[in-house]
Length: 53
Image 1 (cartoon, rainbow, N blue to C red):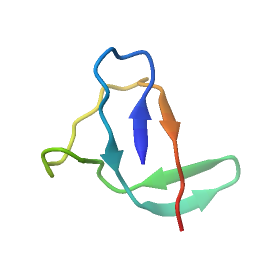
Image 2: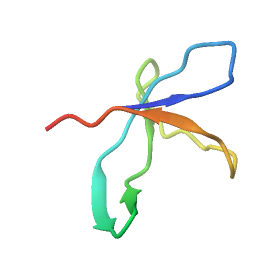
Image 3: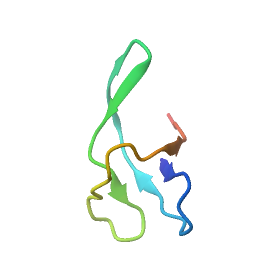
Image 4: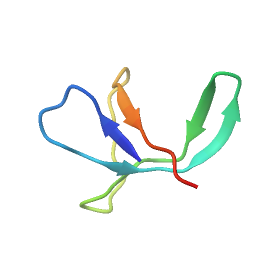
């Protein structure tokens, strides 16, 4: 679950981890929880990340 920091409206995006590296991980396309559509995010956007198994 990705939640953007520093944005007044609360948005949440589901995404899956597809690859893990040293000190980083890569995710699949983020899906907006409310609309179910792919979200296009700006470079440099910071997120709170919640990982569920």
